[in-house]
Image (cartoon, rainbow, N blue to C red; front, top):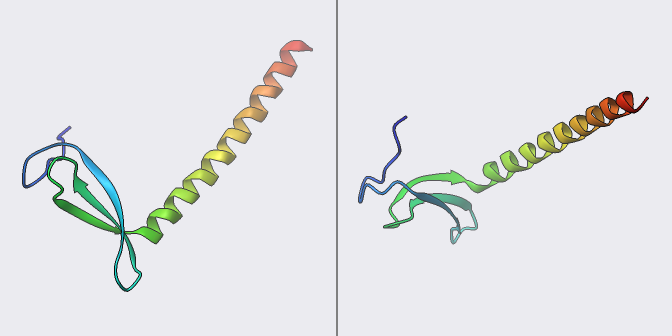
Length: 78
């Protein structure tokens, strides 16, 4: 698999930096950890929604898994 690299310094690590414009718009800039070159920008609201949805799905999955584990343990103890 090819690793992404910064177009300016060819470093391989990136970070997400949250910024707000003077008009109040929120964005998440993806930038190189080494030199700070911005390689992408995402709408912060969409990212927040994606994270919240992922948290809900993970929580539901863990609840179902926990329920199944309890059922299996109860069967073994019967």
